[in-house]
Length: 297
View 1 (cartoon, one colour):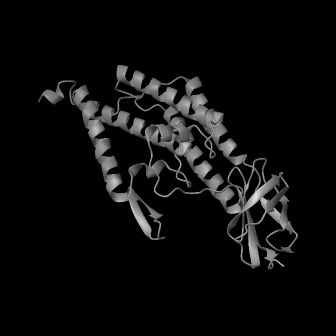
View 2 (cartoon, rainbow, N blue to C red):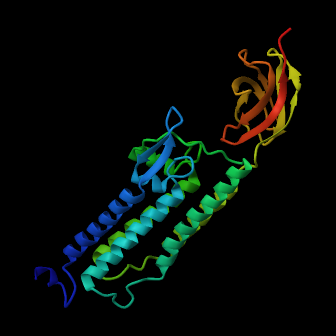
View 3 (cartoon, rainbow, N blue to C red):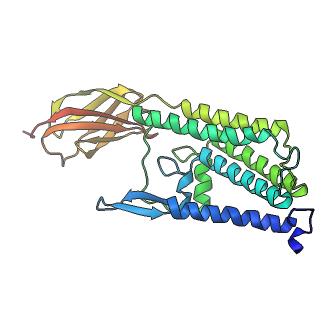
């Protein structure tokens, strides 16, 4: 058989490349069929299941997760290389598996798990607010911008560094593997260290989020729609917040990290109203029943 010409038992190298790619594609297609859906609510509040395989690399707010992308890239790269080795040799030659790859795969995995745990805890405490988009559509340019940007859409040096170092390591991996595809290439310790350090920095940056926003008091506690309401609290942010009172948007007139002054909406109905502040970086603070709105004299 022509496919056995490369060695005593192994397949031809070109065949090994294509067969490894085919196995990965078949496996990814199976995952897409089995679990490539995500449930959203439509405009009527009814559940709507949407099928997109890339949901696996999205975060809680449906933005592309930097840590999940790194884990996915290294998982696919190493799976492909190991399959090529197996098909080409039908065995693992001595030294075919370099222990450095435990770091290259382990640090992205640890970063993904750590980032998820940190974000989940911060969401529970109100330190961050993750608003999911309704069945988001992703383009390549949008996905890349979300990988290197923070939750507010601004370019983030820590995220960009993490992504770039891993891209460099992956390029070096595939170039070296193409020259000697019988074992996983030995990547420089410095490059492995840079990817590991950037993963640790990424997780540390996630943990260093602002404190949870909090509303402690509202003044006055009773008034009509012409009343200027002062909202006191902590960690309300430096940027202009979004304020709703009784579910309607209030006009923000001034703000600091500890106080926001607003004008009430003319459409508010009298009654006991909740006050909510969403900071410019997405943190939410709410004080139920904080304002007693009375009829205008």
